[in-house]
Length: 201
Image (cartoon, rainbow, N blue to C red):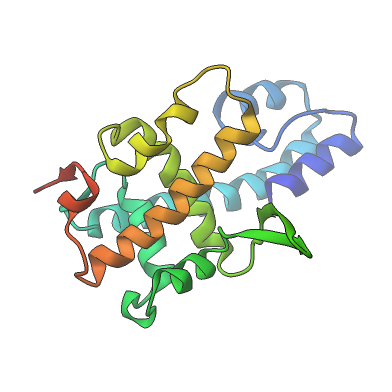
């Protein structure tokens, strides 16, 4: 809806972003737009505000429903996304299955005796993959003493390390975090085994 409104503005030579309908952005546009264009855009703004309010309410409810005991850095909304996308953790029999489901496994190119790693294959669940990557970045900040973050600190903690290496480290943390959560949720391990600092514990 925001993009449709922006496209309409562009047809009238008004260059703006998709947040054109919000607060001060709209106030500035309102003063310089013709009446007929304001009337059309108000239709978009009404729908956008309703959707925004509905999403905010749903997000608040999801965050409130998250368990109090969870790893620090794992927000209520991210917890809800991960749990809903995985569904039943017990359906995975080993770490390879959960790793494959996330789509965070690297490919391999092999010919004869030579082989090299390829970028992640990205099959599986894209929403889960996105949530895990976001979680990995937060873990670096909120779980600096965890075993997983300490393992990759030599890469993430060095300013001169190139962006590609940092991304690979984050992908590795995200993949391992999925495995660790699987181990925790299926009672194969406890938070202390990973060095997690827990909320509400």
